[in-house]
Amino acid sequence: MGCAGFTCSKNSLCALNILYVMVSLLMIGIAAWGKCFGLVSSFQVVGGIIGVGVFLFFVALAGLIGAMKHHQVLLFFYMIILFLVFVVQFSVSSACLAITEEQQNHLLEVGWNNSLTTQRDVEKSLNCCGFSHMDINGSCAAPCFHYSTCTTCAAKIQEHAGEVLRFVGGIGLFFSFTEILGVWLTYIYRNQKDPRANPSTFL
Image (cartoon, rainbow, N blue to C red; front, side, top):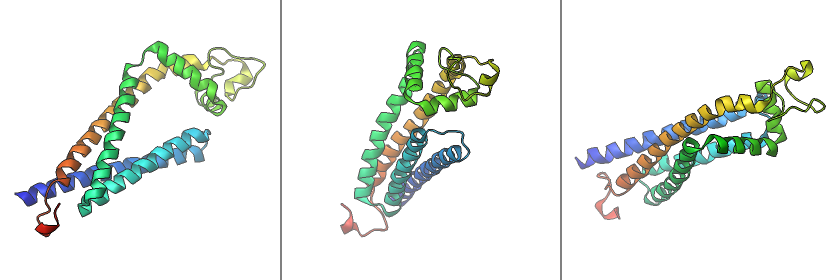
């Protein structure tokens, strides 16, 4: 019975970390693909996504190695890091779901004004010019600018911003619960005795 419980905890923890490895590689791949094909020209955005992907990859790798070897120290630090990630992700996801339309518009405008490359990306992909007003004498990356048929980007962004925030918040909440599950599994597994090990080596 002890062996079955130990193996079940080990397999569950390994499966969870394999899922995290796949998610991290997917994040890195999508960011690199978007940069290579010119879908996103902002290095900060691409670098941020790749950075999060690499961090998640190493955390998952530590958890996977710790689970395979039943390494007490590695599992302890993995559990602490995963709990901290859970707290941050749960807070951000809850904020995404609770944000009001006024706060959303303010954040969109601040983000728009802080990055010229992001402005160009949005104008090109949504075929719009300016955030709340269009400067006819200025420059714009959208094709419609040459025909003077552009609308402002604020209206187009706000159409989908609420849906995107709810989607991101929902996905974030889902993964935050898998993270707390990972913390619980790690705690259980770390305190289980490996039936194949020498009894005197268990602390």
